[in-house]
Image 1: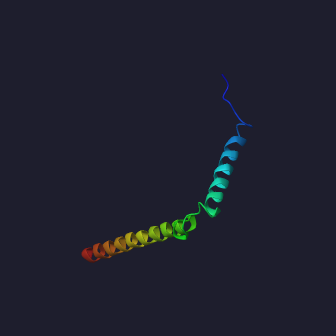
Image 2: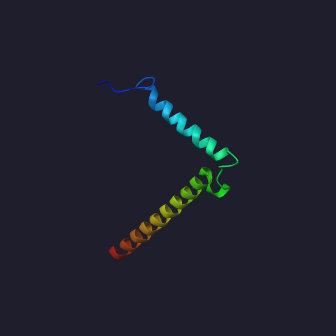
Image 3: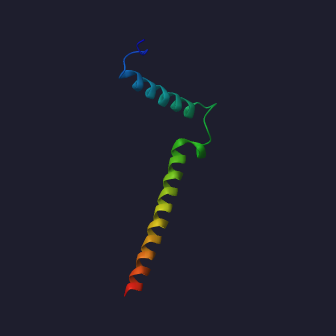
Length: 75
């Protein structure tokens, strides 16, 4: 039995992604269903990006301190 398709094998995934993005846009901009400004996608992405950068800086600083300590121990 052939696999059912709506339009074509290549166009169906594109249609699905477009429909999902459009539905999310409508959900975020509809006054009745819109989340508070601090819970919108842009704010959440900014928060996650800042958290990732902070954790990365902490990790790099720890590696630098470890490298300096090991180079002092060798000298």
